[in-house]
Image (cartoon, rainbow, N blue to C red):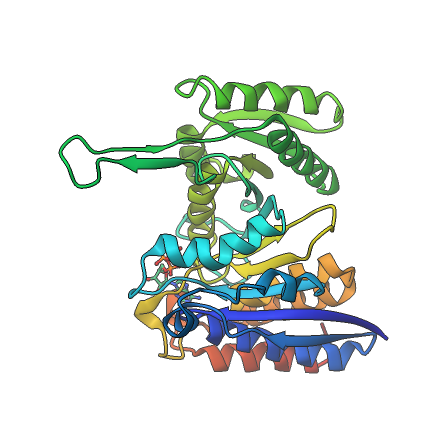
Length: 358
Ligand code: ATP
């Protein structure tokens, strides 16, 4: 029996609700597959933990996580604590501490889902956005002086390193190579940002020489938003900086139907550290506790986690079960225009797995 240690961190808002749903689905999948077992350990970190202990996660939290095979993460953020504390204290601490430099975000219109783009289906919108996840605009480099005075100054300096840019661009090329269309769009802003972004373009061209089988194009980030809406079928794999991809991937999931569907993997591709898997959405305070959070993004995230663990068959089976439920169109949460609940969608996916036809 192949056994994997999973650290589950529901954290804030709807995070614990969707992670509980995801673990339920993974449990049913394991029973059906029988070839592998997930040993799940729950960690109570997040904003409640901060209120009790003054920190978002245990001081030795990374040591505790180091031995696991993957981290299944909900969402972080709470109205009572500034965002930069919650984000840097938990999610970014894990991403940075474990050098999870590749943030991978698929977006696809699943069967039965209506995109806000008229008449578009999964044949037109099937993308993977690769986000640089360790430096760039979110490197935390900057400061403030003369706080509160009229002459106050704040700086937020982007950091692009040759190592950091090369590895993410290489990762994106390798991912594009695994896809049927073998197409990569490099997003940039080198017309206005003439240092880091120009180096980004140069490195993309250099790395691209090693991938003659991949078709590459370059797009300015502003033009990319238009292209995503008007010519979605021209896009396959996309690589962009931390900030650019953060924004583009929210647009991508909205175009794919709902932010509640999108998955994310924060990968340490060399596997020196565990990777972390989370739905793309945040804490969603407005629906927390109402039982209507869409768990599909967390299920898809679970499929990405299984794939990373080497359980490709189980991952495919889970995706089929998700698609079976969306195609039926009978159990949608309100974000998809339905009246369904987290529990109802979870049961429907579990039933599809149990039925044995996926
Ligand atoms: P963050 O800054 O952490 O990304 P945010 O507040 O900007 O968080 P979300 O928390 O993702 O964004 O929520 C944005 C909107 O999408 C909210 O109206 C929320 O209710 C909705 N939403 C997010 N996730 C889901 C979900 N799983 N199911 C249904 N609606 C969701």
